[in-house]
Each structure stands twice: as structure tokens, then as C-alpha cells.
Image (tube, one colour):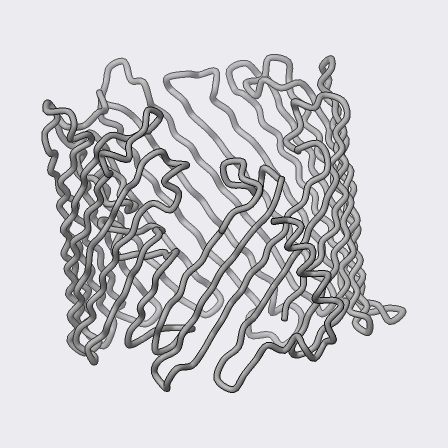
Length: 546
């Protein structure tokens, strides 16, 4: 496969440029090929490095065909093939793979509004309680004027061999509209693991799960009041091969709303309860949780924005919960952004001061308590932008109170600073970046102190006439950890140096070719025997699109 892809790109360079314009009156095909080769060299303690030693390659071929069949009928076919020996790019150690592919028909390919039919790989999202995932199969929707929309899907897990089982999912959704004020939705989805597909190493049993949901969205008072609500009920069985396992049914509900009595004030509230046995069909619900949230957003003046929020949540809602004790969590957050000179017409109008304060209190009902702690974090940032440079100064204070384990209590201080400078000189555009940070962390009971120093800088040079860019970077990180620190790591320092070059080889309306060269070198030194290592990465990449 790799040899074939290499011959494709060689052929592209041999063909005259005019042949690359694969376009016709009502359609065309976009082809993108990228080839990346790198060598990663590791010396010292190779086990501490996250890199893969040796020569690595990654090649991608993307085909994107679009055709207008009629005014409201547009077709698209998409395919993405990858060949690689890089473990970070592979799927289950495969040297080549079909990453994604689909065909679809819609009234508008960018944003379908009337209908869409799609087959192949797709992602679909109905509601958080019902369905939100990616599958291999087919999906479709059709909208009846401005009053109704019907959606349906069928699919299975994409990699049955890798999962060691086949899971089939299907369902549909109906939405009814009344102008722009009211939307009522109903959803039914289910998923079923095929019993005969289960293998010895399968991580699931003969699962079955179905969910019915109903939701409402309401807008009132000239769009000043918004109300949303959703109810869902699931029926779940972990393994129907086991006669002792009964179907488990449970509910989930969420209600949220907001009101804006005046333009500069917004008051919102939210309530959610998800029972322990509730299971969404590949959705995103957090089972065994009840939470309540209130928030106020207030802008008294154009130069001042404020937000105050409080959320309370707890688990172990019933005897069906797997938790032994209930955990309560209170989260309070305040943020404010001030632009004191907003109305000035000079460089001071960009001066911005941002403040963020978060407090979390968590405790359990058991005695003695297994969890009982408070966390406080406060951050203040000052930033300003000038015609050719900008800066940012920040400070973060954190404090932890742990009434169960006093040894983990700490407080910390962390100032940060960044500077960016951009200017033209000698026909080049120069862009400098500098960042620095320091963290002081002290454990109150033992008096142990951990310190962290970080700094990095970079220079990017660009020459517009030849479409060339050269980048230089250097970074340093030093951990000064106290003996016996909870971090459990000896003092260590890492230094990284990098250089990158990007060149547009050719760019026309029908053809684009880009070349990228990169090299980086990292030194890691640890105050412990046989822990040091060095990493060198040398990269070459070519991207062709026509």
C-alpha cells in the first residue's frame, strides 16, 4: 500500500500542472496526498521517553468528490486512507487503514436544511440522554416545511474485529415546531450486542439497551425567556445470557431556563437528576447524580462584565447506587472582566483585567468521613495589545484544606508573564514570543516546598514573496522538588530546542504543494541514577492538494 501511495505522488509531479484541475461544470474532485517521514533517536533511559525509536512514516490520501445533480440535490463522496508504521497514527497496530468514508445526498452540502441521506461513517447527536456517538451505517433526516422534522439512523460499531463484538444501534427522532417559539421532540433509540459475535476476549456481554426521551424548548417574551426540559427512561440488561440478570429501568430529567428582564442582566437556573440505573444509548449522561445550578450574568457598564454561579450536586440517589456513601459537592465561581479605558481612542483602550475565583467543597456522609476538603483558586490576569506588541501578566493562588489527610494540604503561588513582538524588517516579518512562569507550592503540615520554573521563547521569520517561514524555539522546565515531596519525583530539568521550515512549493487555483522540515532535540536530566535521556526528532513532510 505504501509503495502505491508513493508512486501516486511521483506521478503527480510528472503530470503537467494543467492536468491537476479535476473540475467540471457542476462538480469536481479534490485530492490531497501527504507524506511524512521522521527519524526519532533516543539515548539514555529509553523507557522514560514516550517516543518510538527509528524511522517512521505516515501517508494520507483523501478523495472528496462533489457533484450537483439538481438545484436541491447535491452529492458527495469522501474517502480517507492512511498508511503508517507510527504507533501514534495506527489503529490496533495496522500498517494501513481506511480512516473514514461516506457518501451523502443533501439539499446543501455545507449546511443541510431540508434533507440529508448519508451512508458510511457518520456522527449523530440527538440529546445527551439518548444518543450521541459515531457509527458505521446510515442516517437521514427530512424537514416538512417549518413545522416538523423526522430523523432516523441505523449503524454498528466500526471495528468489530478490534472490539471483539458487533453492536447494532438504531432509532429515530421527531421534532415539531410552532414558529420560532416552541419545539417539541420525541426520541427512541436502542442498541443490541449480537450474541453470536461475542468472542472469548470480549469486554461486554449480550447487552441490550433502549431509551425513550421527550424534550421541550420554549422561547417567550420577545426571546427574553428560554425554557428547556428533557425526560428520558432507559431499559438496560448487561448480559441476556444470564437468566439471573433482570432488565433495569430508570429515569433521567433535566430542566433549565433563563430570563433577561433587562438587556444587561441574565438569570439562569438548572436542575438535573439521573437515576443510578439509567443508561443512555452511547450518550453522555452521568448516572447516579443530582445537581442544581444557579447563575447570574450582569453587565452594569460596557467596560465591566461579571458572573456569579453556584452549583450543588450529590450522588447515591437510591439503593440502586453502587456507592456506599453519599458525596456532596458545592462549587461557587465568580468571574469579572474589566476594560477600564474602553472608550478611549488610543492604545489604552485594549487594557483588560480579568479575575476568576473558584471554590469547591466536597464531603461524604460516612463517619469518620473519607472525603472532607475545600479547594480555592483565584486568578488575575492583566493584558494589553499595542500595534506591534502585546503582553500578559498573571497570578494564580491556590489553597487546599483537607480535614481527612492533613499531609496533602497545600497553598501555592504561580505568577506568569508573556510577551509578543511583531514587526517587518529587511523584507521579512519578524514574530517573537516569550513566556515565563513560576510556581511555589508548600505543604502546610510538613513544610515541604516544591518549585517549578518554566520558560520558552520563539522566533518566526516569514518571507511573503517566496511563501517561506522559518521558526526557532527553545524551552526550559525545571522541577525543584523537596525530599519526600508527594510528587514522588527527584529534581529534574528538561531543555528543548527546535527548528522548523515551511515552504509553499506551488500554489494555483487547481494545485497546491507544501513542504515542511522540522528538527527538535530534548535533554532530560534527573537527580537520580540512570534516569537521564535525550530525544532527537527529524521530520520531513509533503502535502499535495489538487
